[in-house]
Length: 194
Image (cartoon, rainbow, N blue to C red; front, side, top):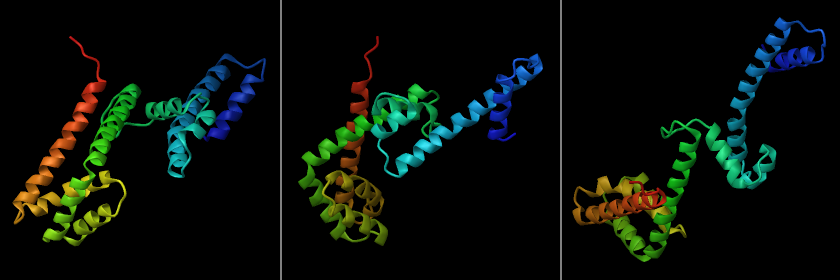
């Protein structure tokens, strides 16, 4: 049954003082199915709004919540997990952990921008990279944010290992360091138990 038909059924029974017990049960079933269907639409609509540039702050009143944080939390609770968390709170926690790790890495990258740019220049000049990897490194070098260099450097590392071992080792060390920064940022958010 279409959502509109379910809605009409529920409304008709609600407005009928002489509705039979079976009609009331059928209307309640229709209402539950309608509620489930509408609930499934909400994360899709939120995703579409976000993809079109709508801010969390603008979404909050539309979702009936008081803040941008509450809007995002609601979305994370409703949206299926791509990373394996089984509960909405787990998805909220995972998202916040990821952001904490991203902030730690971004801070480090900004503080070490000149070293990262020097290394990216050497990787770009070393040769041996396929055109896609070389293009990614060069585009990242043109970015104002040094954080943009990390992913292209890590992706180019395998191609560097043959013939440019020292550069490959330097890139690998940076990748390991940023991974450790992410883990440390996440660990610092977790309460100490014991």
